[in-house]
Every structure is written in C-alpha cells, then in structure tokens.
Image (cartoon, rainbow, N blue to C red; front, side, top):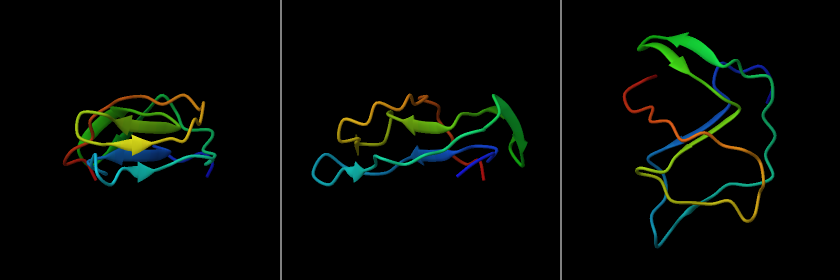
Amino acid sequence: MSNARQGINVDGAGTSANPLVLYGNTATGSPSSATFSCGTKLTSNLNIYLGDSVVNRNGDPAAATNRQWHDCP
C-alpha cells in the first residue's frame, strides 16, 4: 500500500486469547495528517491503538503509532 491518507490502522481488534496477527506488511507514503469526515487527524503508515487492541507483530520492527480512531470513518 502506498500514499494512503492513513496506512494500516488497527483500532479495536484482537483479544488476549485471539490476538490479531499482523506482520510483514508494507505501507509507505502516508502524510503526517489528513482530513476525514470526522475532521483532521494525525496519520502514519502503521497505526496500532493499544488501548483496545491486542496484536501479535511476530517481531516485525516496523514503527507504529498508537492513536485512537474510534468513530472516525
């Protein structure tokens, strides 16, 4: 994926018993912010909100932000 307003976004996925498995994906070119129907949000190539997501990254070293996106299509 390249040049998406928000690259890969995980917000509200996985549980301790069944984590979301996410690794080896490539997202590039996302801007630092973009405008959506809910307003302007900070964006990134990979966002995983850890407040309500459990993700197994299998050692993937790709940098990820930790921003909540609830109710923002």
